[in-house]
Length: 202
Image 1: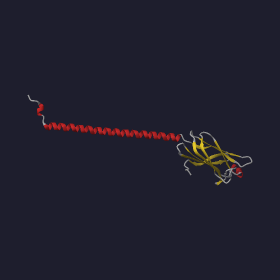
Image 2: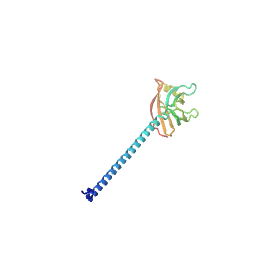
Image 3: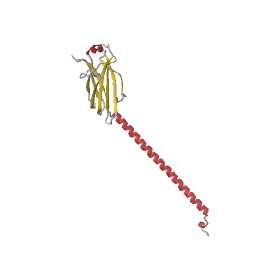
Image 4: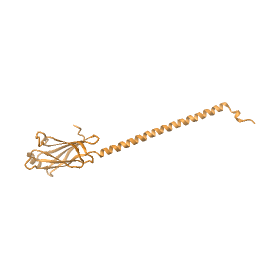
């Protein structure tokens, strides 16, 4: 009786070895593809996490920022002096505003009529407020000549008070509030007459 191993064909052995190597190479290629897919999945997951964190940070930054604006305007008679508009403004947000600046002026039929009581040559009055605490009402008076008081109360002139409020948040981002208010004599009120939140840093 003969041993079958003695009859192994060298060609068969070589073919079997080649097939084993081919199978091993195929397995390596499959593993390479798997690793590559895992790398791509990891990168995609990291990007999605970063994007989600960035969106969350932007939402938080937009919500937790100063919101400067006008609360009310009221026309007052100043007794023996010139009349004025009592302007109440505040930071409506929940965080302080830094580098806050208020600029206000009044015009009648397009002509600048307001003035600074300490310097009548100044028609536009600016206050550098620095840090403005949130939710605290602030008062500012816009004076104008007494000869206009009766005219605007009778609706004879187009009387507008303009307000510009600028500030920065804790990160240094710039914000702007610009609004015109027109006096409506029948109701003795000031109504919004146009504005913007993109008035630049000038």
